[in-house]
Amino acid sequence: CSPRLCPWPSPLLYLYPVPRQTLSPMTGPLDLVFVIDSSRSVRPFEFETMRRFMIDIIHNLDIGLNATRVGVIQYSSQVQNVFSLKTYFKRAEMEKAINNIVPLAQGTMTGLAIQYTMNVAFTTQEGARPLHKRIPRVALIVTDGRPQDRVTDVAAQARETGIEIYAVGVQRADMNSLRAMASRPLEEHVFLVESFDLIQQFGKQFQDKLCASDLCNGIDHGCEFKCVSTAGSYHCVCPDGQQLMADGKTCNKCKSGHIDLVLVIDGSKSVRPQNFEVVKQFVNQIVDFLHVSPHGTRVGLVQYSSRVRTEFPLNQYKTAEDIKKAVQRVEYMEKGTMTGLALKHMLEHSFSESEGARPLSQNVPRIGLVFTDGRSQDDISDWARKAKESGIVMFAVGVGKAVEEELRAIASEPVEQHFSYSADFSTMTHIVDNLKLNICPEEGKGETEIRSPCECEALVEFQSNTLAILENLTEKHILLPLAQMTARLEDLENQFANKK
Image (cartoon, rainbow, N blue to C red; front, top):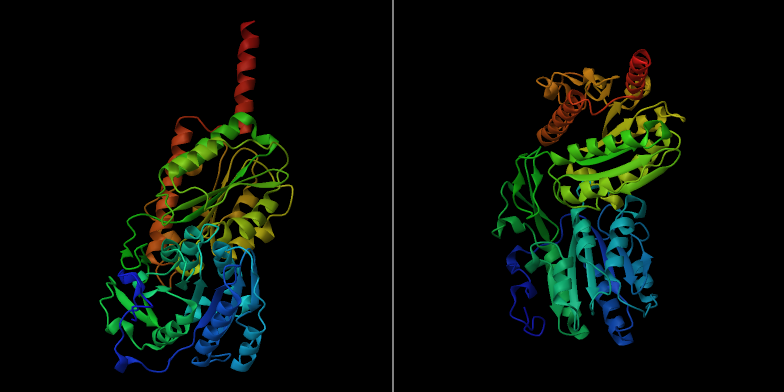
């Protein structure tokens, strides 16, 4: 690495040394998106250098519909899609579009650009190949300044979705911001170039990275289970049923059940204020047994009556204590019972990645728990079916005037293990010993979807603890359905009348 390319001694500034004899033409396709800073600090002749940089890299890639696809984004105070991954499949067309870019010449909202890259540029609608095809998704961010917005959290989310981020800083770029954006290992994804004049020299080295053959064989990758080489990089994978931890190297052995849990609670007028407080207590007792953290279990809360309100999404609170405090602050709606509308909201919003749900590719179980005390005023069957078809494991808990038929329609298979209704909760004493067999049958046995060991452990742990909480609340007579409360009040009135 040239000293002019790497003016500081930090190892983060050096390309990983790949021996020349291992270099070969790229053997696999990738989806590559350039994210180019066109803020006012980038002078016209410097932007011309960036054009040449992109064109040089494209000229050394195998471009095509079934080969490498390229997209270009420029950003300043706003984000502009120059062309998406599905727009061009010929170098000449891409080169013409790049030469026609008009710089935006405003601020430096790098976080906004990363958000756009994740939510738009790398979607299948914009031309990215589906995740199951395992085509590497590579974002190359080039910037010359300090971001005017936050990049740490959004970059982490982008990396979690499977995007490999290279951060290239030029001249005045902030090193800490580059490190916050880039994928791991940082020494292979963070670069600082002394001037725009040298960015083309960096481009040649970057091409070498994209064309390096099997990096796993040439480095000490540190993967606990297995290292997988991709175009110009590598990543660690875990055995089926285990999840990669935050360090990107070790595997989760299912010591705790990590889930994405959305609780959908009935706030209709029939619940009554005192019972709504009991429901909040029920929610917080569930939170007590969860392993809440950004990389562990995430919890969201939705309340519904005649309308639906997200009390907090999956990505808002990072600790159980913060969640419990937020639950206590929830205000009772007190109107109708639109359960179908609540299920629609849960599916379309609560379990979206923008609100904190982990990508399906990470195999984190998605659980929806619906708590209701009455008949829905709208149809629930369609949205209940769609929720289950999307992979959400649905639990239904009914109290008082809740309709068993509706609860069964909401609940996942096997229904008996995913719904509960009773006037006094006495039927909540399910046999838990066979719970794992019912939720996660052996391959080829039963009709239930086959789940990975980690998913099974998470679901079993969640259901076991939820049943225990409901039984405990029953024993203490904390949860009393409306019908039972009415009967007790009538008894007390009769006793009082007889005494008079």
